Length: 239
Length: 239
DNA sequence: CGATATTTTGAAATAATTCAAAGGCAGTGG
DNA sequence: CCACTGCCTTTGAATTATTTCAAAATATCG
Image 1: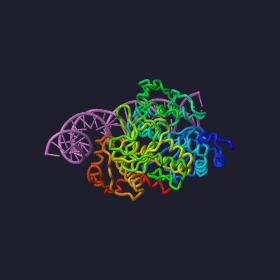
Image 2: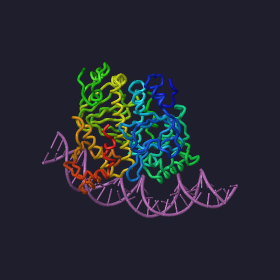
Image 3: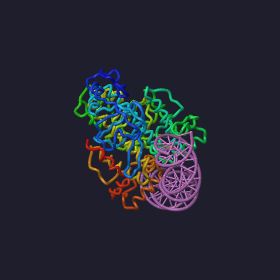
Image 4: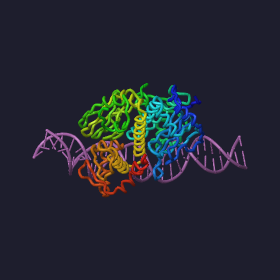
């Protein structure tokens, strides 16, 4: 059995099949510098990525320069699921990123021949959908400060769930590897509004900044009141 | 082989296995009146639905009465995918609805034992995710009139893709089985803003109403300019 | 036809955006 | 080491799109 790394490997833990071994044998570790694209818009969906470390922004661009970030993805998240021959989104490294790149065809064959692997994969796909639904709710229903609070909970949950060494406890210390523009494009706001919302939380002693790219949550209860829907994971149960 | 109906049956076309036969044997057709819930918030995810006819609103409710509609689902759409033991959303019939209801456990077993079925199911799941991403873009980046135009294209594409008799040509006639409040809650706007946006499109002779629940697109080019991202399906290729 | 609910339109209020400028931080080169 | 440059972030003031509040018009249903 070839060496296996990453979240995809975890999904296939305890499973063995020629197609699975072929998949992991075909996986190539790649490295990206900040600003580099893992996937560009309209690109053929020939590859599939499993992030080992770093942060990636998945975005959709409009004709007129508008941009919506759909997700910030870090270690243990997968990238590249598509129902079509070309990929409508853009995946950009925000920090130095390591990822394993698999040929789609090999993934497809492994999924078809290894039902347990496919089953785990389906659960992950469903979680991604649920996260997108959270996002729709946040953008559709919440005010600027609420969206930002919700964003902090999102990052906090992801930092815990998708840390490189596997799931760990949630922490009140939040890393913000993305720029204010990235946050704005994720939340459907402008840079200025994001900045003002941060200032409002700061003024209320709800959060405190170390530097502009990492902050401390001082009053998690207040953040939950603002951005809550049970902290993004409670309803995820422990299934 | 037991009688098979609905989209789930199409996904399993040409496939045969004891688990698949069991699944379809366990499927029960159910009927719902407008306002009835197929699924309520927090309900255990024991069932899975395959809509045969009518329209269902899938929504997420906030603590304080806010509501975000995540999708309008009609014939040939599936409902109830969840990664957790309880379902965070609410599914409500807007019109009289017929659906086949399957036990989740039976579905799960059929997916594990019938790879081709699981593969088709995965594609559908991915399409749902892509549709949610479209939604995020629309709500996050577009103005009120643009959101409404985008919504009309969404309905138009769904009317064609998910009509009871299988996919058919797109038409300029759009059915609006939902109320203005439903549309508002889908687009992250208020009833009044939706109404004003409709009026603006009417005044510009872009659309015309028959009655308040069905309209005609007079200038599809203009609707595309406003709400477009290539009409929601172009980039979906013909895969 | 009357009664109720939904939709449209109007006017005032507000949250967020836009435009503009100042402040802070990081890296480069003197 | 400090100053300079460029970029990102914050803050301020004016503008604008959308919301809120209120009422009229229209549709729906018994």
